[in-house]
Length: 378
Image 1 (cartoon, one colour):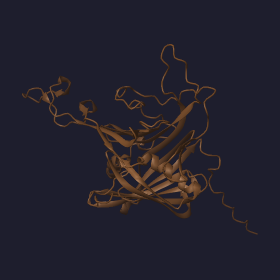
Image 2 (cartoon, one colour; image 1 turned 30 degrees about the horizontal axis):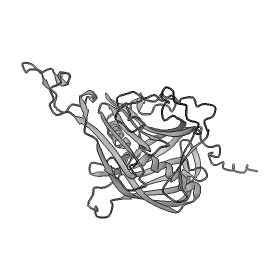
Image 3 (cartoon, one colour; image 1 turned 45 degrees about the vertical axis):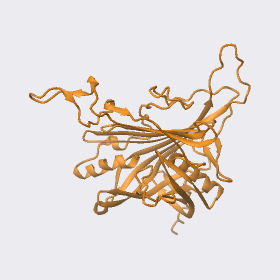
Image 4 (tube, helix red, strand yellow; image 1 turned 90 degrees about the vertical axis):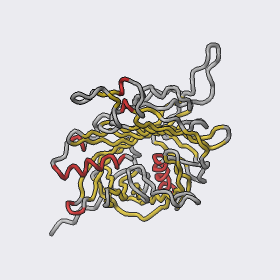
């Protein structure tokens, strides 16, 4: 996932100086938004380009965080009205120590939801205006000609189908696209998934490349061009009720800290498969990151194969982290401060730490620890 695409950049640093683009300032503009499914769950609109601009809500539109009820008793998914968290990604390279390999940004917002315009002659709905949530996780990097722009977007909608739309797009030197929708359809919990792959020797002339020397023009052989990739047929399937995607799961972890819920279990939807996820509230500690020192509490995320599928390969999470990961969250507000885990690189298992560097529009209670100054010498 996001971090696994940054790892080759980190290993490349051993050969020379890093490219400044590995660590763009948090104020750098977001990458161009990519294609996304239509909010009504249809396949129409998949090729339209989205925008990151927030539509101005009407005067009657509610404001504030979006609180989405979950199937877990006493817990809701809370999407901030507006929030931006910028992180640096560090790998522990054993002999040379920790090395920064890229940047990672999570943004969240809520905005007015419009299910559609009334037909001619039909009166506009008088129901209270609803809101929808939007979360974006984005990694950027570049080194010696290798470029990376990778974003995972989640839209949380006030409707049964689709209730959530997740889009996972990578562009740059390597390109791929994945899209997931899930929610309730015809009274059943369902998911819809599709991915793209390089076409298989089609007849489209734009997929042909010039031959070398005396060879003729021919179809490319598994190149990395995004325009040479086509969508697979989508897969619709029934899933366990209460399933969440990984982005939503991170925001649920924030609520464990806020509500002091000791542990929860739920199905975690990853592409077209699901895992049994257990979240456990852990220890408290002061965590120091580039953004400051914060009073935090850990939440451990432990995804396991469902019963009867114990032979399934190890879980590969949001950041390329395999198996269990730990999130250190601000003890009062639940804002994530640091994420820790293990990333396998060939025969090596490397420690990774994703540390908060800058933040904006967070809860007013999210502040660094103020340490008492040492007494003056007399």
